[in-house]
Image (cartoon, rainbow, N blue to C red; front, side):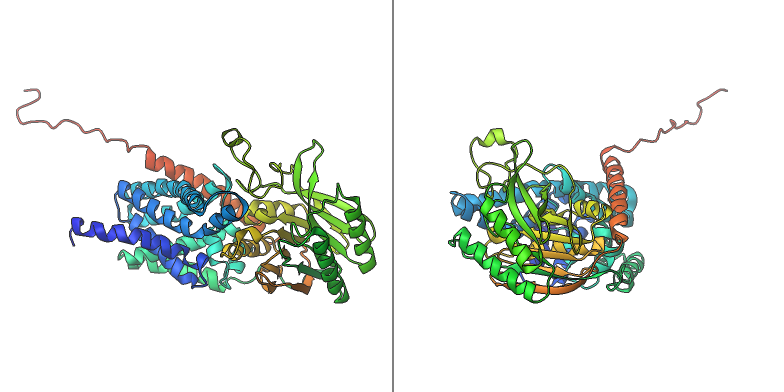
Length: 507
């Protein structure tokens, strides 16, 4: 096939790769389809000129995120006055911002292949892809959504790898496997097959990093009310009081309520605080509840509150990483008085310090909603001495999309990489309980009302993934910077001595 004839085919393959990459996130379809999409994209990038590789990466990543972020349009329509067309435009623009970083990687890949050869370019691409995920975790806005690690989170071996190497290490293992498969697709079988065997052996043969029965046993519960949006705060409070009673009857010593389960505030509504304290004392349980609170400087914080049965309100932790455009507006001066989507009145401010809640069952580290997407926060809680992780979230604003399922994938990885059990309470689903090894012990789906009660083994020490993942971050970040320099800096031209013609020189 000539180059001219191949161009239309490549133009069709790029969006096809992007659609396949999103497949597992937006449907109940197989993860293997999405992995095949990544293999196709990697093969395209490793066989293109720099300009074409940048364009094909731009198209594929844009299609991927335009499909994955469909829940963003649902949130805009439900919580703002914008029309569906403007909401679709916002999703397209958000996907474009993410796609431009993918285009930069695509351009670099072609330059790496020119200098390092096909095999070296493939290995550099695997490392560079993880570096791109790290970039999205920090700049320009924190949004590590839809990583390779999250893609494979439903697979049984993913938790084992994450417990040893962290989420970033899991992404690197997957990226290496995808790069090896892309080399096979490009005909470099001899070198690619051993790499595939190593990656496959790592995924399937690695043992669990923690013993499930190694820590102290506690009985805990998650409650999910799935209350109607039209219900009053008093009706919601009575609903969660009933669910808490059902959990206490089944022996739970800790009960976790979702974020925004009740819109009362523990710092402003004394009657609500006294009622929580009375409930905890009467049922003999500790409570973790979400509440908006006021900070020391008068700022509004999205917090989690521990209500102990013997002490009442004990500690309050504030959410440290906020949702861009949801809980605050970046570049506020450009938007004037337009409110953030999820804020009740104005923007939230981020918390500044780590707080562990001293519940009777053990020390609890709380991740509020979006914080469950960030491995670094979990590592900080694990190093600080947390024995149990809690993720309270309000996923109602996802609507009836695949957003709650995408969010759940990230939460599972937090348990595995830290070696800590995790309780996830969502007001309308998906609520879940994960073991120290990331095993799903129970779930309540979207729209379901109920109580999850499980006996858990508390974490005794952080899993290796909480330390190794941090090392993978530094290694991949450093290598990615060096690889960018390799792609950008032109090669030094070798100086050639002028040829000596016959008859020249001294007689």
